[in-house]
Image 1 (cartoon, protein in one colour):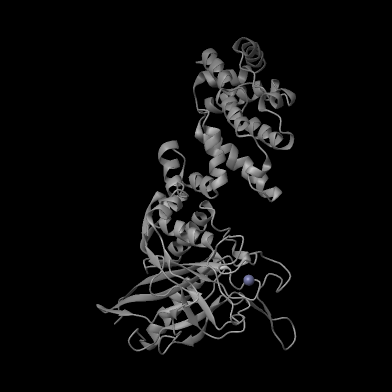
Image 2: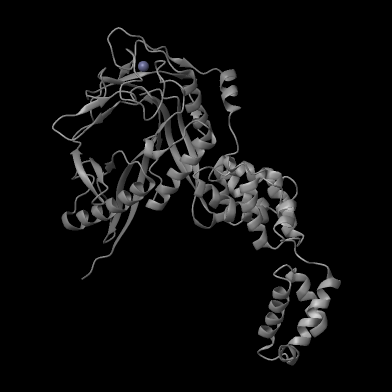
Length: 488
Ligand SMILES: [Zn+2]
């Protein structure tokens, strides 16, 4: 007899984000990626005895701003704790973090799903800590330590286990990335390790009417959306297989930590946690607790902007753009602002969107820069959109002009003249050409008039002949009207 097995994957996520402050969390060393190893260090971040850390106010304000954007409750009183562990990239043998009084708790974020739907994911906490250094493993039987990264402000965001597919996990990660970029608190460049993910994955399985939960696996240190998505998918299948073979559950098994092998596309067991680690958390005696007074909080709140998901939904609602187009435009704040600047002049938003997505972003991508860095003037894009709408140039010619605008910086009217792309819309002039074409093609005229199967094709043929005679410069709308007038 076959047994009925159904399952649901349950995922919570921890996200670590570097904050883009000028200096480190507790000393004045510069936060700079890709510098000569151990050139951005001082006695504080090297963990020398007897030194005194001082909190970076900007880092705290950045983290609070994100917590506000995540609808969290902000603690009026927050403190720093020492998390003790030994590792070569952590010379002072403890990391300064926040344990029982984090700067914020209990928020939520909306993530986009398919077809314009959203889902609310709970946020357990946002807190601040410092990053460790980096162990380097060159060829040979030795390792090196680079402490440039040690002490970099690191924001940790912990979500509720509210996600039920790898696609949702990815959507959350993408949403957080564009949020911190919008807020200007992090570049969140994953190739530079500025954003890292640790999903907690397990399954709720229903078998023969009974419900089972598999042991939670935490996958460490993922630094791409792809690895995040793939590792959750892999872990889902692995836990299902393991349950079906051994019947292991949360009660009989234990929580484990796994790594992601990108080469083999598998998760690998690192350790099974018999009990929680004893990090011997205690308040850091060298750092004063932080009191966030109302006035200070208001000043930070002033840094909030319209968040990307809200913007995306507004574009669909207000400008009638597709969810896809709205997503492309809002992926980057400066692109969205450019778009809004261009449509400010009362132009059709869809027309401007097409010029930006079909030409602007492609050119930016080719040049390896942002749309804004192309140096396009938003007024010129607006002007061009107006010309297309008015039938002065065709949509295809519009794309050509857009490309030339990037190259030359000239305005679209000048370019349309120079490139000979102005459409002929003068009915009198076009009528003469239409008459010529009709006279030269009696068979096609016959077919249109007969109204038979070939009628539509013949009409298209005649329109094509007119376009050819005008070297593509006739306004097809006007030509169609003239043709309709003459042929019925
Ligand atoms: Zn330092």
